[in-house]
Amino acid sequence: MTGLDTNLLVRFLTRDDPAQAAAVDSLFAGLSEADPGFISREVVVELVWVLERAYGFEREAIGRALFGLLEAQDFVVEAADRVGLAASRYVKGGPGFSDQMILLAAVAEGGRLVTLDRKLAREEGAALA
Image 1 (cartoon, one colour):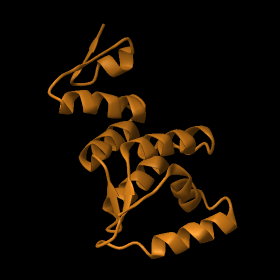
Image 2: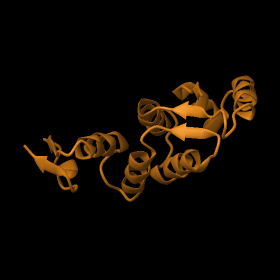
Image 3: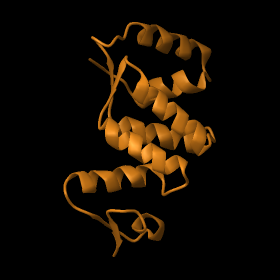
Image 4: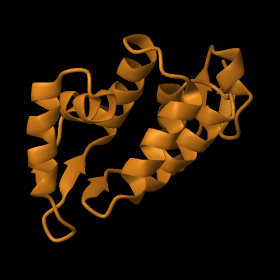
């Protein structure tokens, strides 16, 4: 398994640097279901942030990218079930993606998330402090 960082995924999705995109394409061509690329939760959270802030991607486009990564046979996404749920909520206009991931991590550990974020506190498993 080969760990993939955020920059690789950004180049792959945005194609903003042709030379780097070609290098990423070459790397990804060598991945397979038997020897996949690993995408950590932290990379997914950072990827969403970069696509939103630096590239101005809309939530729907980011959701399509995330669902594409989750469906690809050549990638293993850490906590894929949480990433998928967070992406679904995020696309529907809920709290930000990173907030969704933080909430889902707390719930996965059998707890709840206490927050000062009123929008996040309305989500199941969260409470306002």
